[in-house]
Length: 165
Image (cartoon, rainbow, N blue to C red; front, top):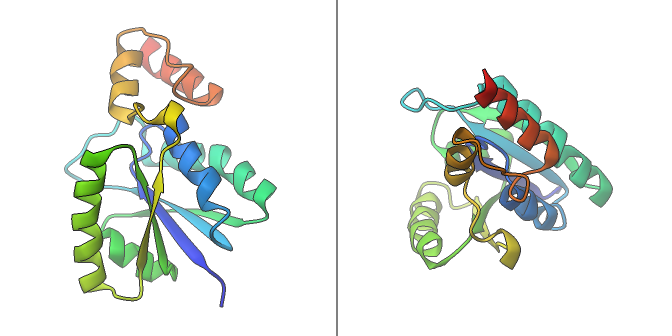
């Protein structure tokens, strides 16, 4: 039975922190699915199509180098439901600090109750990417700051273009 993992997120935009999690996740599974959350109550900076392209372009080559199959999808329901719908039995969650751990432990407990066959795997962020959040990246880019230390080059260019017009 192949080990299928889902890595959910808004990926608005993809950051070096997300990339760090993917580098570790592809060593734990046979197939990784990046699941882009689409929620009607949120107004992302990048469209769903743009975020899917980002995940495909940035994460796909990492998975390929590791010999891990890769796919992207969207979801607009419970993350644990999306995991079940994709056949994933592993849910990848990145942790930056203790605050993340407290919140993620609550989610993992609730998810386990709803779907005991989906196991949450926490991946601690590597030290250089711990402070990076997509929210801070958007704020810095929106104010004309240089985000090249926080995102892949393609994403920095996309942010610059997004805020130029």
